[in-house]
Image (cartoon, rainbow, N blue to C red; front, side):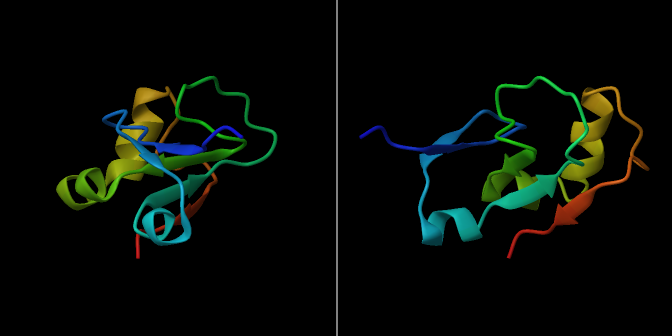
Length: 81
């Protein structure tokens, strides 16, 4: 059985996925019809590690800008808990 990893969309950090570790990560859900290729994209979700979400409070906007999307792009962001 292969392990699943969370991958940070900002710094590319990888961590084994689990209930506790996954809850601390930031989450940015793209609309299902968005067509974006990125190594950190799983399904329609980007994740950001706890370090990046604390250092970059506007990490969602920074990520969208780096992908060529306007920060006003209709999303479903979920802040880190």
